Amino acid sequence: MASGEEDGTVDDKENNNKKKTKSALATAWLTFYNIAMTAGWLVLAIAMARFYIQKGSTKGLYRSIARTLKFFQTFALVEVGHCAIGIVRTSVIVTGVQVCSRIFMVWFITNSIRQIQNEESVILFLVVWTLTEITRYSYYTFKLLHHLPYFIKWARYNLFIILYPLGVIGELLTIYAALPVVRRTGMYSMRLPNKYNVSFDYYYCLIIAMLSYIPLFPQLYFHMLRQRRRVLHGEVIVEKDD
Image (cartoon, rainbow, N blue to C red; front, side, top):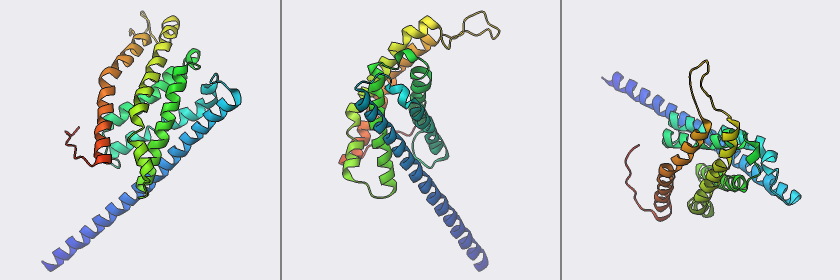
Protein backbone atom coordinates (compact mmCIF):
# COMPACT_ATOMS: atom_id res chain seq x y z
CA MET A 1 0.00 0.00 0.00
CA ALA A 2 2.81 2.37 0.89
CA SER A 3 4.43 1.77 -2.50
CA GLY A 4 1.14 2.54 -4.30
CA GLU A 5 0.72 5.77 -2.35
CA GLU A 6 4.27 6.82 -3.22
CA ASP A 7 3.67 6.09 -6.92
CA GLY A 8 0.49 8.19 -6.78
CA THR A 9 2.36 11.08 -5.15
CA VAL A 10 5.07 10.94 -7.82
CA ASP A 11 2.45 10.91 -10.59
CA ASP A 12 0.68 13.91 -9.05
CA LYS A 13 3.95 15.83 -8.84
CA GLU A 14 4.77 15.03 -12.47
CA ASN A 15 1.30 16.15 -13.59
CA ASN A 16 1.60 19.36 -11.60
CA ASN A 17 5.04 20.04 -13.10
CA LYS A 18 3.66 19.46 -16.61
CA LYS A 19 0.76 21.84 -15.95
CA LYS A 20 3.14 24.49 -14.60
CA THR A 21 5.38 24.11 -17.67
CA LYS A 22 2.43 24.40 -20.05
CA SER A 23 1.14 27.41 -18.13
CA ALA A 24 4.55 29.11 -18.24
CA LEU A 25 4.89 28.46 -21.98
CA ALA A 26 1.37 29.77 -22.63
CA THR A 27 2.07 32.93 -20.60
CA ALA A 28 5.37 33.49 -22.40
CA TRP A 29 3.72 33.10 -25.81
CA LEU A 30 0.77 35.36 -24.93
CA THR A 31 3.14 38.01 -23.59
CA PHE A 32 5.21 37.91 -26.78
CA TYR A 33 2.08 37.97 -28.95
CA ASN A 34 0.52 40.96 -27.19
CA ILE A 35 3.78 42.92 -27.21
CA ALA A 36 4.14 42.25 -30.95
CA MET A 37 0.54 43.30 -31.66
CA THR A 38 0.88 46.44 -29.54
CA ALA A 39 4.02 47.35 -31.49
CA GLY A 40 2.31 46.60 -34.81
CA TRP A 41 -0.64 48.87 -34.16
CA LEU A 42 1.70 51.57 -32.83
CA VAL A 43 3.57 51.39 -36.12
CA LEU A 44 0.25 51.87 -37.92
CA ALA A 45 -0.64 54.85 -35.73
CA ILE A 46 2.72 56.52 -36.36
CA ALA A 47 2.50 55.83 -40.11
CA MET A 48 -0.98 57.37 -40.33
CA ALA A 49 0.03 60.43 -38.30
CA ARG A 50 3.20 60.93 -40.37
CA PHE A 51 1.27 60.59 -43.64
CA TYR A 52 -1.28 63.20 -42.61
CA ILE A 53 1.39 65.62 -41.34
CA GLN A 54 3.39 65.32 -44.57
CA LYS A 55 0.48 65.35 -47.02
CA GLY A 56 -2.02 67.48 -45.14
CA SER A 57 -4.72 65.13 -46.43
CA THR A 58 -6.03 61.60 -45.89
CA LYS A 59 -6.17 60.89 -49.62
CA GLY A 60 -3.96 57.88 -50.28
CA LEU A 61 -3.56 57.13 -46.57
CA TYR A 62 -5.13 53.69 -46.78
CA ARG A 63 -2.86 52.56 -49.62
CA SER A 64 0.17 53.71 -47.65
CA ILE A 65 -0.60 51.49 -44.66
CA ALA A 66 -2.55 48.68 -46.38
CA ARG A 67 0.19 46.04 -46.25
CA THR A 68 0.89 46.53 -42.54
CA LEU A 69 -2.81 46.66 -41.72
CA LYS A 70 -3.54 43.45 -43.61
CA PHE A 71 -0.68 41.62 -41.90
CA PHE A 72 -1.53 42.50 -38.31
CA GLN A 73 -5.28 42.24 -38.72
CA THR A 74 -5.02 38.84 -40.40
CA PHE A 75 -2.51 37.63 -37.81
CA ALA A 76 -5.22 38.22 -35.20
CA LEU A 77 -6.74 34.90 -36.34
CA VAL A 78 -4.27 33.40 -33.88
CA GLU A 79 -6.60 34.64 -31.13
CA VAL A 80 -9.30 32.22 -32.26
CA GLY A 81 -6.75 29.46 -31.78
CA HIS A 82 -5.94 30.76 -28.30
CA CYS A 83 -9.60 30.37 -27.35
CA ALA A 84 -9.95 26.98 -29.05
CA ILE A 85 -7.05 25.37 -27.15
CA GLY A 86 -8.04 27.02 -23.88
CA ILE A 87 -5.08 29.28 -23.10
CA VAL A 88 -7.47 32.25 -23.17
CA ARG A 89 -10.85 31.93 -21.47
CA THR A 90 -13.00 33.62 -24.05
CA SER A 91 -15.74 32.32 -26.31
CA VAL A 92 -14.39 30.94 -29.58
CA ILE A 93 -17.56 32.08 -31.35
CA VAL A 94 -17.44 35.67 -30.07
CA THR A 95 -13.73 36.01 -30.82
CA GLY A 96 -14.16 34.40 -34.23
CA VAL A 97 -16.99 36.76 -35.20
CA GLN A 98 -15.05 39.84 -34.12
CA VAL A 99 -11.79 38.85 -35.83
CA CYS A 100 -13.41 37.56 -39.04
CA SER A 101 -15.60 40.66 -39.40
CA ARG A 102 -12.47 42.80 -39.25
CA ILE A 103 -10.70 40.63 -41.82
CA PHE A 104 -13.78 40.81 -44.04
CA MET A 105 -13.73 44.63 -43.83
CA VAL A 106 -10.04 44.76 -44.73
CA TRP A 107 -9.71 42.12 -47.45
CA PHE A 108 -13.11 41.89 -49.11
CA ILE A 109 -14.29 45.48 -48.89
CA THR A 110 -11.66 48.17 -48.38
CA ASN A 111 -8.75 46.42 -50.04
CA SER A 112 -10.82 45.03 -52.94
CA ILE A 113 -12.74 48.20 -53.83
CA ARG A 114 -10.24 50.96 -54.55
CA GLN A 115 -13.00 53.48 -55.29
CA ILE A 116 -13.87 53.69 -51.58
CA GLN A 117 -10.37 53.75 -50.08
CA ASN A 118 -10.34 57.54 -49.73
CA GLU A 119 -13.75 57.70 -48.06
CA GLU A 120 -13.77 59.49 -44.70
CA SER A 121 -15.56 56.48 -43.21
CA VAL A 122 -12.49 54.34 -43.94
CA ILE A 123 -10.26 56.77 -42.07
CA LEU A 124 -12.78 56.80 -39.22
CA PHE A 125 -12.74 53.06 -38.63
CA LEU A 126 -8.97 52.89 -39.15
CA VAL A 127 -8.37 55.50 -36.44
CA VAL A 128 -10.86 53.79 -34.11
CA TRP A 129 -9.37 50.33 -34.69
CA THR A 130 -5.86 51.64 -34.09
CA LEU A 131 -6.69 53.36 -30.80
CA THR A 132 -8.74 50.37 -29.65
CA GLU A 133 -6.06 47.81 -30.44
CA ILE A 134 -3.18 49.76 -28.92
CA THR A 135 -5.22 50.06 -25.72
CA ARG A 136 -6.39 46.43 -25.75
CA TYR A 137 -3.07 44.76 -26.47
CA SER A 138 -1.12 46.98 -24.07
CA TYR A 139 -3.71 46.14 -21.38
CA TYR A 140 -3.19 42.40 -21.93
CA THR A 141 0.59 42.83 -22.00
CA PHE A 142 0.81 44.70 -18.69
CA LYS A 143 -1.69 42.32 -17.09
CA LEU A 144 0.38 39.31 -18.09
CA LEU A 145 3.46 41.02 -16.67
CA HIS A 146 1.54 41.65 -13.41
CA HIS A 147 2.21 45.36 -13.65
CA LEU A 148 -0.97 47.02 -14.88
CA PRO A 149 -1.00 50.85 -14.66
CA TYR A 150 -4.42 52.18 -13.71
CA PHE A 151 -4.61 54.54 -16.67
CA ILE A 152 -4.25 51.56 -19.05
CA LYS A 153 -7.06 49.73 -17.28
CA TRP A 154 -9.15 52.91 -17.26
CA ALA A 155 -8.58 53.44 -20.99
CA ARG A 156 -9.41 49.81 -21.79
CA TYR A 157 -12.80 50.01 -20.05
CA ASN A 158 -13.79 53.59 -20.86
CA LEU A 159 -12.60 54.53 -24.34
CA PHE A 160 -14.72 51.80 -25.95
CA ILE A 161 -17.87 53.65 -24.85
CA ILE A 162 -17.19 56.20 -27.61
CA LEU A 163 -14.83 54.27 -29.90
CA TYR A 164 -17.00 51.19 -30.37
CA PRO A 165 -20.04 53.06 -31.80
CA LEU A 166 -17.76 55.26 -33.92
CA GLY A 167 -16.05 52.20 -35.35
CA VAL A 168 -19.39 50.62 -36.21
CA ILE A 169 -20.51 53.83 -37.92
CA GLY A 170 -17.30 53.91 -39.95
CA GLU A 171 -17.66 50.27 -40.98
CA LEU A 172 -21.34 50.61 -41.95
CA LEU A 173 -20.74 53.78 -43.96
CA THR A 174 -17.85 52.09 -45.75
CA ILE A 175 -19.99 49.08 -46.69
CA TYR A 176 -22.75 51.45 -47.81
CA ALA A 177 -20.28 53.34 -50.01
CA ALA A 178 -19.20 50.02 -51.55
CA LEU A 179 -22.72 48.95 -52.56
CA PRO A 180 -23.02 50.99 -55.81
CA VAL A 181 -19.61 49.80 -56.99
CA VAL A 182 -20.40 46.17 -56.21
CA ARG A 183 -23.76 46.39 -57.95
CA ARG A 184 -22.27 48.01 -61.04
CA THR A 185 -19.29 45.69 -61.41
CA GLY A 186 -20.84 42.45 -60.14
CA MET A 187 -17.64 41.66 -58.25
CA TYR A 188 -17.49 38.37 -56.32
CA SER A 189 -20.93 37.47 -57.73
CA MET A 190 -21.95 34.40 -59.71
CA ARG A 191 -24.78 34.56 -62.20
CA LEU A 192 -26.75 31.68 -63.64
CA PRO A 193 -26.21 29.81 -65.83
CA ASN A 194 -22.74 28.58 -64.88
CA LYS A 195 -21.00 25.20 -64.67
CA TYR A 196 -21.48 25.06 -60.90
CA ASN A 197 -25.20 25.82 -61.16
CA VAL A 198 -24.85 28.17 -58.20
CA SER A 199 -25.97 31.79 -57.88
CA PHE A 200 -24.39 34.27 -55.49
CA ASP A 201 -24.85 38.04 -55.30
CA TYR A 202 -22.18 39.87 -53.31
CA TYR A 203 -24.34 43.02 -53.29
CA TYR A 204 -27.02 41.32 -51.18
CA CYS A 205 -24.32 39.65 -49.10
CA LEU A 206 -23.11 43.11 -48.07
CA ILE A 207 -26.65 44.19 -47.23
CA ILE A 208 -27.03 41.13 -45.00
CA ALA A 209 -23.68 41.97 -43.40
CA MET A 210 -24.95 45.47 -42.60
CA LEU A 211 -28.18 44.09 -41.15
CA SER A 212 -26.20 41.68 -38.95
CA TYR A 213 -24.91 44.68 -36.96
CA ILE A 214 -28.43 45.19 -35.59
CA PRO A 215 -28.42 42.09 -33.32
CA LEU A 216 -24.65 41.77 -32.86
CA PHE A 217 -23.61 45.30 -31.88
CA PRO A 218 -25.91 45.66 -28.81
CA GLN A 219 -24.86 42.24 -27.48
CA LEU A 220 -21.14 42.97 -27.71
CA TYR A 221 -21.50 46.55 -26.48
CA PHE A 222 -23.54 45.64 -23.39
CA HIS A 223 -21.17 42.76 -22.69
CA MET A 224 -18.33 45.28 -22.53
CA LEU A 225 -20.41 47.53 -20.25
CA ARG A 226 -20.94 44.61 -17.86
CA GLN A 227 -17.22 43.86 -17.95
CA ARG A 228 -16.53 47.54 -17.21
CA ARG A 229 -18.74 47.47 -14.10
CA ARG A 230 -17.05 44.30 -12.90
CA VAL A 231 -13.47 45.44 -13.46
CA LEU A 232 -13.70 49.12 -12.47
CA HIS A 233 -16.39 48.97 -9.81
CA GLY A 234 -16.04 45.44 -8.49
CA GLU A 235 -19.62 44.41 -9.24
CA VAL A 236 -20.28 40.69 -9.37
CA ILE A 237 -21.94 39.90 -12.72
CA VAL A 238 -23.69 36.56 -13.05
CA GLU A 239 -23.75 35.46 -16.69
CA LYS A 240 -24.94 32.30 -18.39
CA ASP A 241 -22.30 30.05 -19.91
CA ASP A 242 -21.92 30.31 -23.68
